[in-house]
Length: 127
Image 1 (cartoon, helix red, strand yellow):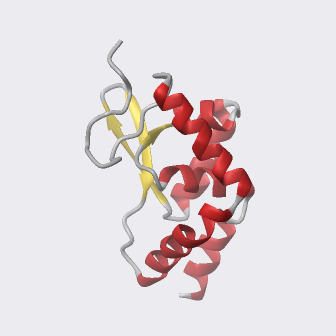
Image 2 (cartoon, one colour):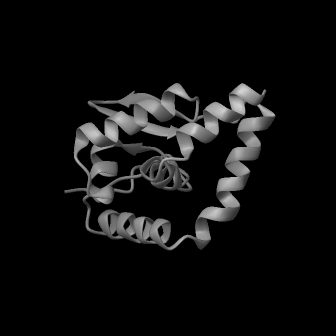
């Protein structure tokens, strides 16, 4: 268990990865949308997602031509406790609040979509 916890904390301890986890708490998001919200190059976002996936914190799945990322199912007590911890501490962090605000703006402007926000429908308006 200690090695699992160490793996989770090591992966999540990097600031960009914590920002990604915070956004994924809202639902499933495509790497291109994460890139736009975080204002980071696609290879950087993909590298961080790979580290989070390797640690068992996120999963990916294909929807049409897009690869979407979401938080992994909490299949262990350690992972559930970690996700519960994120739910409690991330709302009070200024940088993480700004990321959520940027994502909300991108959704409203039709530049971003998030699946799983109350329904399984996309939040991107029809063009």
